[in-house]
Image (cartoon, rainbow, N blue to C red; front, top):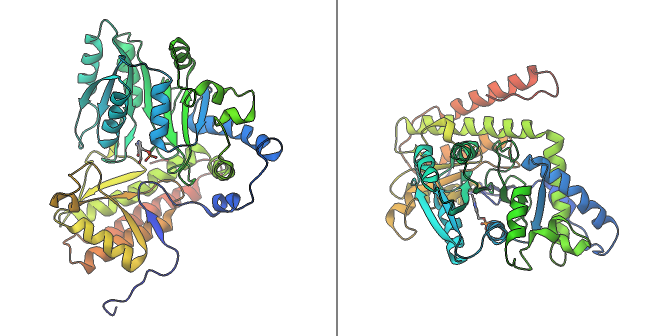
Length: 417
Ligand SMILES: Cc1ncc(COP(=O)(O)O)c(C=O)c1O
């Protein structure tokens, strides 16, 4: 190739860990004039979203929708369950758990933080002893980020419920599934989660702007015991509206709702098990490529243990300023945007330029992931960043096995390796 030629024209690819690629069906559903918000089609359609959201969260219980990002959902969850002076336990495997704890502190909530750093999952023994030592039950809730998007560690939410049960602790279990929902298996009711927060711009494939708080009857009781709840954040009218506007505490996010309808149709048309299996196979292809690159060069996956890796995002370390250079090269030359590293080094430090993340959440398929990996491979070569060979072959082999399993499986069955 002649030096300096740009290959970026054509459809760009945003491979950051949220917002994610928006399906054409979602964009088309949103491309319409404003609907009537008092009666008619929008009102009827909105009611259909609730059971379909529940099916994504795997809960039979309540959901409240907010015109917000994930931070809004965090705040809503805290505002409906806790009051100033209450104590929460936060188990951290990355920047987002810290962020949720800081939000709690700002609301006057006492935080007990068990920080396991950015390279390790929750240490369930330490958590279990911490909970068991709380015989007075000062801890009212455990804040648990399922997938921390900064580190790409996936924590075991069911084990957190087991730890609470083991010492008969009544604290609410509150999970952040902002990165994981629709990508990594999550079973709200089966895992005993009382509150789950998420947002629409990652696995749900809708432009940023809607937050969701799912809550159990036990969490609803905690809300009922509070002396007061912020009128705007109150989940009660949102989950049980008598009037349409109460779903949203005001004007509906009209176009986002149409987008969400289309996204939920895609998700349930494919099936939750198949959606999770797709994410898992594609993630495995990415890890295979990363393993090959790292065999002879500085590239390292942040999470060494495959069982702890999220299917939605992969955090990488390249060292030096390699990550910043690689991101710039693939964006300018190929139209491929990779995620910055987050929470791994101070933003103004030289080390910051050594980290990056690959987002593989939502509307992604085999050819997109092969394109993503091909782009990274080309960038490593163009920038002469040392790397092992055979990454694309390794990824293609994973994809090939997934494809052949899929075609040989009876229709309707999904495969998950
Ligand atoms: C796990 C997790 N929690 C919370 C947030 C915050 O969400 P938002 O940026 O939409 O406010 C994010 C955003 O990336 C996230 O990944």
